[in-house]
Image (tube, helix red, strand yellow):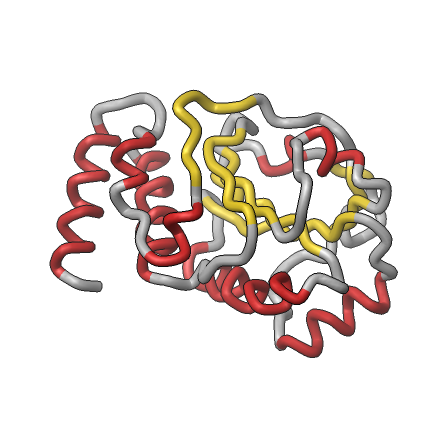
Length: 187
Protein backbone atom coordinates (compact mmCIF):
# COMPACT_ATOMS: atom_id res chain seq x y z
CA UNK A 1 0.00 0.00 0.00
CA UNK A 2 1.37 3.39 -0.88
CA UNK A 3 2.33 5.95 1.75
CA UNK A 4 -0.61 8.11 0.69
CA UNK A 5 -3.09 5.25 1.12
CA UNK A 6 -1.58 4.41 4.50
CA UNK A 7 -1.91 8.04 5.58
CA UNK A 8 -5.53 8.15 4.42
CA UNK A 9 -6.30 4.92 6.28
CA UNK A 10 -4.64 6.25 9.45
CA UNK A 11 -6.59 9.51 9.20
CA UNK A 12 -9.87 7.68 8.61
CA UNK A 13 -9.26 5.37 11.55
CA UNK A 14 -8.36 8.32 13.80
CA UNK A 15 -11.53 10.19 12.88
CA UNK A 16 -13.72 7.10 13.26
CA UNK A 17 -12.20 6.16 16.62
CA UNK A 18 -13.85 9.26 18.10
CA UNK A 19 -17.33 8.65 16.66
CA UNK A 20 -20.03 6.09 17.34
CA UNK A 21 -20.80 5.45 13.68
CA UNK A 22 -18.59 5.30 10.62
CA UNK A 23 -17.84 8.74 9.24
CA UNK A 24 -18.88 8.63 5.58
CA UNK A 25 -16.46 11.45 4.66
CA UNK A 26 -13.49 9.59 6.18
CA UNK A 27 -14.48 6.40 4.37
CA UNK A 28 -15.02 8.26 1.10
CA UNK A 29 -11.43 9.52 1.33
CA UNK A 30 -10.30 5.89 0.96
CA UNK A 31 -12.14 5.38 -2.34
CA UNK A 32 -9.92 4.94 -5.40
CA UNK A 33 -10.36 3.19 -8.73
CA UNK A 34 -13.54 1.11 -8.91
CA UNK A 35 -14.34 1.97 -5.30
CA UNK A 36 -15.18 5.51 -6.41
CA UNK A 37 -18.52 3.97 -7.43
CA UNK A 38 -19.16 3.05 -3.77
CA UNK A 39 -21.61 5.62 -2.39
CA UNK A 40 -21.72 6.09 1.38
CA UNK A 41 -25.05 7.30 2.74
CA UNK A 42 -25.02 10.37 4.99
CA UNK A 43 -27.31 8.43 7.35
CA UNK A 44 -27.73 4.64 7.51
CA UNK A 45 -30.73 3.29 5.60
CA UNK A 46 -32.99 0.70 7.24
CA UNK A 47 -32.19 -2.89 6.32
CA UNK A 48 -34.77 -5.53 5.51
CA UNK A 49 -36.32 -8.44 7.36
CA UNK A 50 -37.50 -10.14 4.15
CA UNK A 51 -36.48 -13.79 4.04
CA UNK A 52 -34.22 -15.44 1.49
CA UNK A 53 -33.09 -19.04 1.08
CA UNK A 54 -29.82 -20.02 2.69
CA UNK A 55 -27.35 -22.33 0.99
CA UNK A 56 -28.62 -25.23 3.10
CA UNK A 57 -32.26 -24.59 2.11
CA UNK A 58 -33.25 -22.85 5.35
CA UNK A 59 -34.99 -19.48 5.47
CA UNK A 60 -32.72 -16.64 6.51
CA UNK A 61 -32.87 -12.90 7.04
CA UNK A 62 -30.10 -10.34 7.13
CA UNK A 63 -30.36 -10.44 10.94
CA UNK A 64 -28.39 -13.71 10.71
CA UNK A 65 -25.36 -11.44 10.14
CA UNK A 66 -26.05 -8.95 12.91
CA UNK A 67 -23.00 -7.87 14.88
CA UNK A 68 -20.63 -7.61 11.91
CA UNK A 69 -20.17 -5.58 8.78
CA UNK A 70 -21.41 -7.40 5.68
CA UNK A 71 -20.85 -6.86 1.97
CA UNK A 72 -24.05 -8.27 0.44
CA UNK A 73 -23.64 -8.95 -3.24
CA UNK A 74 -26.71 -9.52 -5.41
CA UNK A 75 -25.83 -11.49 -8.53
CA UNK A 76 -27.14 -13.95 -11.15
CA UNK A 77 -25.65 -16.79 -13.18
CA UNK A 78 -26.36 -14.97 -16.47
CA UNK A 79 -24.64 -11.75 -15.33
CA UNK A 80 -21.27 -11.20 -17.08
CA UNK A 81 -20.09 -8.43 -14.70
CA UNK A 82 -20.94 -10.77 -11.80
CA UNK A 83 -18.59 -13.38 -13.27
CA UNK A 84 -15.83 -10.73 -13.39
CA UNK A 85 -16.20 -9.47 -9.81
CA UNK A 86 -17.09 -12.66 -7.91
CA UNK A 87 -13.46 -13.90 -7.64
CA UNK A 88 -12.50 -10.48 -6.23
CA UNK A 89 -15.27 -10.74 -3.63
CA UNK A 90 -13.92 -14.20 -2.77
CA UNK A 91 -10.44 -12.68 -2.33
CA UNK A 92 -11.87 -10.02 0.00
CA UNK A 93 -13.57 -12.75 2.04
CA UNK A 94 -10.31 -14.73 2.20
CA UNK A 95 -8.37 -11.66 3.35
CA UNK A 96 -10.79 -10.12 5.85
CA UNK A 97 -13.73 -12.46 6.44
CA UNK A 98 -14.32 -13.42 10.06
CA UNK A 99 -16.15 -12.32 13.20
CA UNK A 100 -16.22 -8.62 12.20
CA UNK A 101 -16.81 -8.84 8.45
CA UNK A 102 -18.27 -11.22 5.88
CA UNK A 103 -19.01 -11.28 2.17
CA UNK A 104 -22.51 -12.66 1.54
CA UNK A 105 -23.59 -13.54 -1.99
CA UNK A 106 -27.27 -13.83 -2.86
CA UNK A 107 -28.34 -14.98 -6.33
CA UNK A 108 -31.51 -13.10 -7.16
CA UNK A 109 -34.11 -14.30 -9.66
CA UNK A 110 -34.22 -17.77 -11.18
CA UNK A 111 -30.82 -19.33 -10.64
CA UNK A 112 -31.02 -23.12 -10.35
CA UNK A 113 -28.62 -24.50 -7.75
CA UNK A 114 -26.71 -26.64 -10.33
CA UNK A 115 -26.15 -23.53 -12.47
CA UNK A 116 -24.97 -21.56 -9.41
CA UNK A 117 -22.56 -24.35 -8.46
CA UNK A 118 -21.24 -24.53 -12.04
CA UNK A 119 -20.81 -20.72 -12.07
CA UNK A 120 -18.68 -20.83 -8.90
CA UNK A 121 -16.73 -23.88 -10.14
CA UNK A 122 -15.99 -22.17 -13.49
CA UNK A 123 -14.54 -19.08 -11.81
CA UNK A 124 -12.80 -20.92 -8.98
CA UNK A 125 -14.84 -19.57 -6.07
CA UNK A 126 -15.29 -21.92 -3.13
CA UNK A 127 -15.55 -19.67 -0.07
CA UNK A 128 -18.77 -17.72 -0.69
CA UNK A 129 -22.33 -18.83 0.11
CA UNK A 130 -24.85 -19.86 -2.54
CA UNK A 131 -27.87 -18.11 -1.01
CA UNK A 132 -30.87 -17.38 -3.23
CA UNK A 133 -33.63 -14.80 -3.52
CA UNK A 134 -35.61 -16.54 -6.27
CA UNK A 135 -38.62 -14.24 -6.23
CA UNK A 136 -36.45 -11.15 -5.75
CA UNK A 137 -38.39 -10.14 -2.64
CA UNK A 138 -35.28 -9.22 -0.66
CA UNK A 139 -33.71 -7.44 -3.63
CA UNK A 140 -36.89 -5.42 -4.22
CA UNK A 141 -37.21 -4.54 -0.52
CA UNK A 142 -33.70 -3.08 -0.66
CA UNK A 143 -34.21 -1.22 -3.96
CA UNK A 144 -31.89 -3.42 -6.03
CA UNK A 145 -32.73 -2.61 -9.65
CA UNK A 146 -29.86 -4.11 -11.66
CA UNK A 147 -27.03 -6.57 -11.21
CA UNK A 148 -24.55 -6.76 -9.73
CA UNK A 149 -25.17 -4.60 -6.69
CA UNK A 150 -23.20 -4.72 -3.46
CA UNK A 151 -24.50 -3.24 -0.23
CA UNK A 152 -22.38 -2.57 2.83
CA UNK A 153 -24.47 -3.26 5.92
CA UNK A 154 -23.45 -2.23 9.43
CA UNK A 155 -23.58 -4.48 12.51
CA UNK A 156 -27.11 -3.25 13.27
CA UNK A 157 -28.37 -4.36 9.84
CA UNK A 158 -28.54 -0.90 8.26
CA UNK A 159 -27.24 -0.13 4.79
CA UNK A 160 -24.38 2.36 4.97
CA UNK A 161 -23.11 2.17 1.38
CA UNK A 162 -23.98 0.82 -2.06
CA UNK A 163 -22.09 0.06 -5.24
CA UNK A 164 -24.01 -0.45 -8.48
CA UNK A 165 -22.14 -2.55 -11.04
CA UNK A 166 -18.98 -4.58 -10.74
CA UNK A 167 -15.84 -3.48 -8.92
CA UNK A 168 -12.46 -4.80 -7.88
CA UNK A 169 -13.26 -5.82 -4.31
CA UNK A 170 -9.73 -7.12 -3.78
CA UNK A 171 -8.15 -3.72 -4.51
CA UNK A 172 -6.10 -1.82 -1.94
CA UNK A 173 -8.93 0.71 -1.71
CA UNK A 174 -11.63 -1.90 -0.98
CA UNK A 175 -9.40 -3.59 1.59
CA UNK A 176 -8.64 -0.24 3.27
CA UNK A 177 -12.35 0.59 3.50
CA UNK A 178 -13.23 -2.77 5.06
CA UNK A 179 -10.22 -2.57 7.42
CA UNK A 180 -11.45 0.86 8.56
CA UNK A 181 -14.90 -0.55 9.26
CA UNK A 182 -13.46 -3.52 11.15
CA UNK A 183 -11.25 -1.16 13.19
CA UNK A 184 -14.37 0.78 14.15
CA UNK A 185 -15.82 -2.37 15.74
CA UNK A 186 -12.66 -2.85 17.79
CA UNK A 187 -12.76 0.69 19.19
